[in-house]
View 1 (cartoon, rainbow, N blue to C red):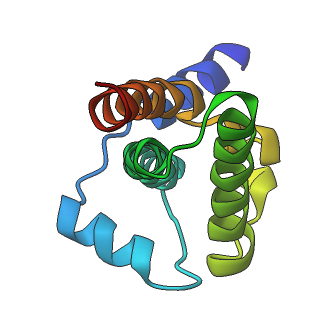
View 2: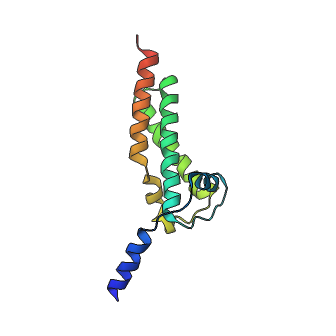
View 3: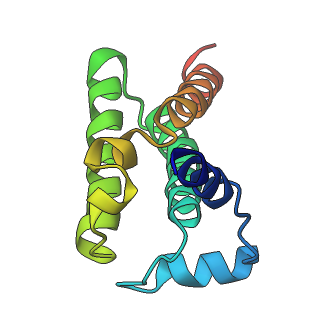
Length: 129
């Protein structure tokens, strides 16, 4: 009995989404979309964060923000946008996706790395002689 439950769990985890990038994009921009596949939604959150990290890195470098204020604002904006996206815009039941912490940490460190690289490069290019 336990073995068959494990087998079903492995099979459900190995399901590959057959949705194209265009279909996922349309689902992401359409409010209150029903997400059948957990991985599709988490992929959308991941890539949204990557894009937001790059954009915020460029903005922070141009403005120019420095130090702890820039880091704190980045995490506040990123967390706020992600929370709004899944809780208000899509009205997703976060328990289906492992709770709010699972969604909020999806792609956090990789977007932080992209943000830092672009922030440092942009700031250095524009504000140093």
